[in-house]
Length: 160
Ligand SMILES: C[S@@+](CC[C@H](N)C(=O)[O-])C[C@H]1O[C@@H](n2cnc3c(N)ncnc32)[C@H](O)[C@@H]1O
Image (cartoon, rainbow, N blue to C red):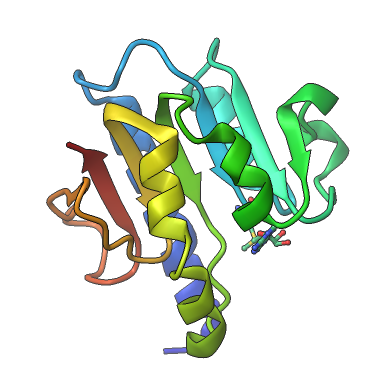
């Protein structure tokens, strides 16, 4: 598969899963949304549309989002997420979206030494995680795949 096709698959899987979680009746009524890896802000912009009225806090090592998708200063956390995210453990978020995979197995393996634990710690019980990397953690229950998403492309979990 070309890298272009792979990218398109990843983006459509990401969008399908965020839209799916938006429609879930058991999504916690209270709680912030965390966007781990703001990047250009395209996903942040989509999260804003989907979760209108919720506070969305975004993380990245550097602010580089499009002007139209730049969070308010109090909703952007700059720095290495494995460090900056620590302050948000126990925040009882409703949803964490994480898009920080690199496509390099060795780099992603390092991320996976801390990301699952951090996501689990940020969520309330019953909250959801949507992630480009698999989050193996005893408190995160993998949810049934959507028919539109290829196995292993994008993942979603509910915190027990
Ligand atoms: C694939 S991009 C996210 C794209 C984003 N979903 C969008 O709509 O533009 C991943 C982003 O995560 C950030 N990132 C990756 N690992 C990080 C880390 N450990 N700490 C802080 N930022 C990180 C990168 O700087 C990059 O901007």
